[in-house]
Length: 295
Image (tube, rainbow, N blue to C red):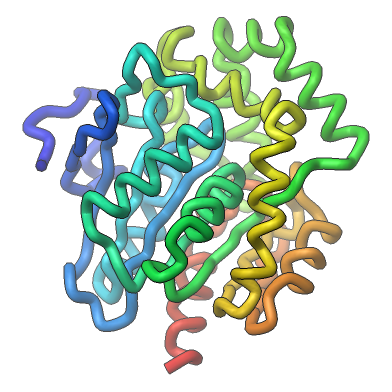
């Protein structure tokens, strides 16, 4: 159903979409559903990472909604979604929500558009019911257990008591990582406020504080996603890659390219981690060109 009221801090000029909500397991899941319901190309399902929400895809959705059906949801506890008291906000919980969301809306002919944690979460959902998906678009993400020592150290520090405190008390991931993840453009104060207001209390930041620890503690979940990748290897894949990312580099890109038999890579030079916000025009153009090329 459509949302009759949403927070006053949501600027219609920045986020010019109709809000919808659906109840799943006691959670109120917010999403936008823009463009023709029977789009001739495909339905694009946008999944965000940490500490963002569907807002991070706003310019891409606005650009593509004339051609594609664009659906972008917020995980419980993120964006405009509300989590139940029992929700633990682990990656497997988000996967369960995404899977139930797809089933409830009976979505088919889906192309996953995944970034950051949206990669393993989304690919886990694809593996559970591949019949609903026809393609993959992966942007600066991963889907396997982490092995790099510096990432493990970051996971232990930021996922430990001190890091968790900094995230919950000072909204560290929003205030530091969002600006650091843009290099081609600087997020405006109004844009930053949409990220800050979405995680405006320590309780609202709980989900954001859980993700860093799950880089290592979520080994079994990530290993299961990695084990499923060979079964997805024949799916057409577009890899959109920011080459100035502060989180992912050449090794992850090469692994993606070696995973998919039918892939195209679009490098966005100079863009950083939040590539869909740092270079939205190039991001949208890469998607449109990929579909046009595939016929």
